[in-house]
Structures are given as structure tokens and as C-alpha cells.
Picture 1: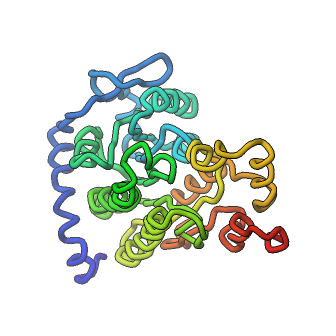
Picture 2: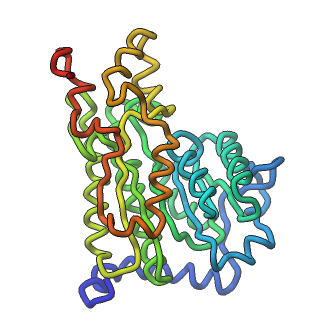
Length: 326
């Protein structure tokens, strides 16, 4: 990106970062959405300023700031905790789970106190959702983990059948793309950054017959964005990765699949999976935290199958003939 071609490719992106420099120089962050306040050992949404501490400003030069979207539960919450354990200042987003987000931030405080962990609302379906989020953030972002997504169950709560395909693409594709456009130029200008886009084994790695077309297409688009962005940034100090979890024990999987099965059906499904178990969210969280360190740089642009091997054998989940699952 430092060559003429790279500068041309990101010219439109770099312009959006100028407002960060102005806001940071003047000390004005333009907070316009509901922010967070101290609530016990964690944070809850309120009308006071985004919490900070003297320690946070003192270590601002050495502590990386990570933004994890969809961080109030599941893989997002596990990733936030893992990053906090690695010494990051972590900002998470949530759509509706305000109390759950406050509980996660309280957990982050037990991992690393005084860094300014906080939670912010983000709704990718709002016309200016990303813009409002960025206006609320008290500073630049070093690490972006674009994890917020909808699945086959959660999409039903946001649109009728005719509108679900659009929701899949607006949340799962255009949401991460918008964040990349806004945040990557600043990473390039500051000389360091990490981007981890969270996709899924379904769409990101393999095709699963019977699954929703639009859901799989939206996850495949994230894998493509990873490769394209990594190619654009080949000569810049920003690393881009894609993590594709498999059947992970999250509220999304329970709502879309497990809750619709009786005990026998759940046991049968889990037995068919690699290792005969679900992936634990902490396993994905630790993987993403590792990707945000320097040791993972050699994997720049990689789309990682984090499914215990389901991606190389999708028939374990979709085959109806027991013999085909062996």
C-alpha cells in the first residue's frame, strides 16, 4: 500500500481518518450516542462520559485498543476476555444485550484493570450505525475483530421472510466492510494494526446442503474480503485474517439448531461432529487473540478453518446415511 498503486487504492479510505487526528488533537471525540458509566466492578450504559482512568492515559502508548463487535455473548465475549488477558484495552459492541455487555466488561476488568474497557451500542441495520459508534469511541482502534453477525434464527427477529436476505448481507457483509473502510486507514497511518474478520465454516470454508443460501453467501463474502484486503495491504503494517468457526456452543447455535432438538437429537448431532463435541467459544477467542499478536504475521490473508475439521468433512453434519458419516 505504500507504493503508488496502494495509495491510489486506499485514497478514499485515508480521507476518513483525518477526523480522528483532529478529534484527538483537540481532545474532542464527538460523543453522540448513549455511553457507559461505572456499575459495580463493570460498566453499564448511562449518560455519563465513557469511563477512563489515569492509568489508561498513562499507558496509552503501549496498550493496544481492540474493538470487538458482537462482544456481549458467545465468540465475541470469549474473544474480548482473551484479548483483555493479553493486555489489550477492549471495547465491545452490542445490539440489544446491554446487561450482558455490562457483565462482559466487568469480566474484562478482572482480567486487566484500569485500561478503559467499555461497551457501546451498534446496530448495523441503522443507516448511520457505524458512524454513531465511531463518534462514541474515545480514541483510535488498533485491532478490529468484526464478529457481529446474524444467523438463521436471529435474522427472523429482525425481518420478515421477504427481507431476511437483505439483513444477512447488511449485517454479515456490509457491516464488516464499513468498519474496515473506516478503521484500516488509521491503522496504516499509525504504522500498526490487526483485522480479524469472523466468518463461519459454512460459507467461509465449505458448503452445507440444506443451510440458508443467503447466510452462506454472506459468510463467503467475508472470506473474500479478507483475501482482497490482505492483498491491498501486502506492503503495509496491517495484518488481516479470517476465522471460520464450526459448530460452536453459542447462543446463536442453540437458537438455530440445538434448541429445536430433543435430548436424543442433540446427543446424536454432537456425536457426529469431529471429536464428538462442540467447539468451545474460548477456543475461538484464544485463536483470535493469538492472531492479534506478532507471531501470526506469517498467516496474513489466511482464511482459517476453526471447526475441529468439520470444514474438510461437512458430510458429518449434513449426510443422512449413517455410513456416509464415517
